[in-house]
Amino acid sequence: MSVSPAPTTPSGVEALPTIRQLPTFRTNGLPMLPIAILVTLALLAIFADLIAPSNPEIGSLSQRFRPPAWVAGGSTEHLLGTDHIGRDVLSRLIFGARVSMMVGFTAVIFAGVLGSALGILSGYLGGWVDQVIMRVTDTWLALPALTFAIFLAAIVGPSEWNIVIILGAVYWTRYARVIRGEVLSLKERDFVRLAIVAGCSKWTIMRRHLLPNVLNTAIVLATLMLGVVIVTEAALSFLGVGVPPPKPAWGLMLADGKKGLMAGYWWLTVFPGVCIVLMVLAANLLGDWLRVKLDPQLRQL
Amino acid sequence: MRRFVLRRAAYAALSLFLLSVTIFLFVRVTGDPTVLLVEPGASKADLDALRHDLGLDRSLLVQYGTFMRDLARGDFGRSFYYRTPVLELYVSRLPNSLLLAAAAMVFSLLIGIPSGIMAAVRVGGWWDSAGKIFALLGLSMPSFWVGLLLILFFSVYLGWLPSSGSGTALHVLMPAFALGWYFAAAHMRLARSSMLEVLGSEYVKLARLKGLPEMRVIAKHAFKNALIPVLTLAGINLVLMVNVAVVVETVFAWPGIGRLLYEGIAFRDFPVVQAVVLLGGSMIVVVNLVIDLLYAVIDPRIRYER
Image 1 (cartoon, rainbow over the protein chains, first blue to last red):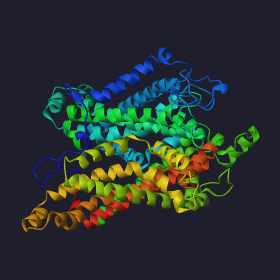
Image 2: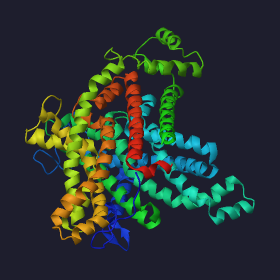
Image 3: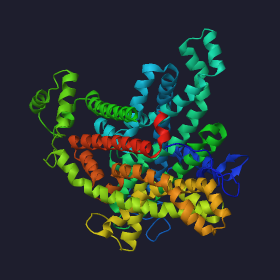
Image 4: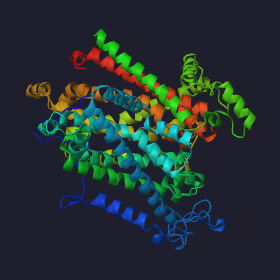
């Protein structure tokens, strides 16, 4: 589908793509809301051992399905209640932030490095290298990301590191596409031609002259991709092919929560979901802000 | 025109070929496929016998030839769990998936188009702002969590709707809403931006100059043209919905393709997983080809660009 320039409304006001106009509670130009959410989650993830009130992987069956503290039957011992084997929900959420952040960030970086490298190679070298990389990219883009990830996960089996590799292997194509496009226009520019005249090798040109110029784009893409990756990880864990139990991953908690859903144990379903939404929301808002700041060309993406 | 069609078709064929190679290689490179292809708990002798039967002692090229020959005959192997050909299973589940996708599509269009149009007609109004928040939530709330919340509210607290299974119209409502949720946001954004574009065009200005009432300008002149991109996207999304419904179908125990995939994982029924991925990917490649060709027929400018 072709991307059209920003349309103009009858009243002459420029109509911008929807997401960008969202209230971001800016202070000093920084989007404070998403930064606050991400910093909070990062602190929880780093200091989980100190903050979490109890062990996230061990519970006592006598304490199972305790409701949150403010509901009748709840106690301050388990602020957000306990799950089907009596594990403290709050502690699992806090350690879950660690899992989500670790998987999310490493997968995004892995996909970014792989995709950017292939994108630069494809765009700069052209010819058959370009053809091969782009045809593979097209094919992989044709596979629905979640289905493809499930397929890979079913082959290699569940583990945190496998998930990182799988997510990287599924999502690098988005980077490769965009970065290749950037490189195609960059390589016609004078500074690249001068570098060729000066006798730089292809390797040097790609590393020293092209890479720094596509870095902004890669960072914007990575932030926007973070939300997608986190939702995919949650979905894989929910289906039982992601992070293996008893690790406290939010998607896994939702899967466990489903066991108590019909009995009305709502806290097992609501809280992990809220955590996922907050993190994804923050990543999306930050990505939109970065897109405007760093890379005006990506506004239409 | 003929050259364009041939080239597009060749690209699609190449994509299908690469798809089959990808699936084929991943299964073999990442480990011993016999472990995936036999039922759990098979003996060592069984494994060796199967390895020979499958020709895994032969070269990769020969193996790929066999793999493709079976696919060409529609032989995707047998399901270990159901003990029937995988293709039969797939075809038997497809109507359910299509029903769910169609219902989800109706939901997403019923929500997306009117709200997108209203947002575009009053840019910057309260409806527009509410729409933006909805669009953001649509992108940020995973569909399966939406599904779980729906069950919690409508099945557990209110007791109005069945929480799982299929059969009646009531069973379709919640899964369709959960699946359509994300797409509603996407359709709303597109409806808004495409309506804005149309409202800025010359013929709408002319309609206004003629003195037509604003309502009539929007309903009669702008609406139809604004709808075209939305419906195109909806066509692509319908195919996507069939293939991404796995988590929603799992939440609601809806007997579609996604549920089949989930069962395939849960029972380590590998032929099923492989077939769902292959068929899903092929479906999307073919639909993309059809859309490309249709576009070329509708809009002659496209033909010479590529």
